Image (cartoon, rainbow, N blue to C red; front, side, top):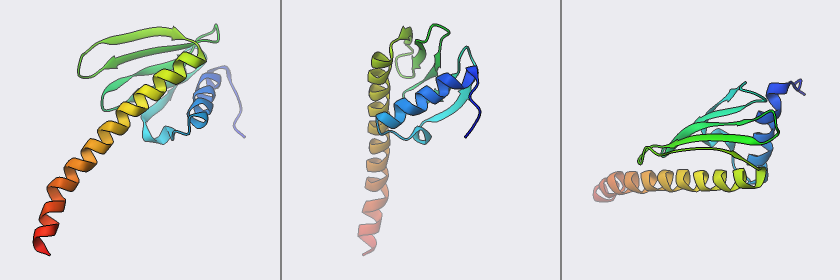
Length: 115
């Protein structure tokens, strides 16, 4: 088991949150950060930012939404953070599904024409 340091607490906590929500952290383009007690930077199709655990044991979420350019920068409880992660994951899933449908429409029609 990896050694736990102050900057691992936040990242390990995020891993547990993703696991509890039954989300795969690998689906998010992310990297571990050592800010305060640790966390991650992420890039999603519709948002990018960072989540890290502050010294006061609350998570800080700083996210910019790509299409609107709006920024959300708040200190959150775990309950609120889970809700926002759910929302971000739902947005990511909608984008992935939209791309899949677009590709299936573009390439699926050509495959059907060849049959």
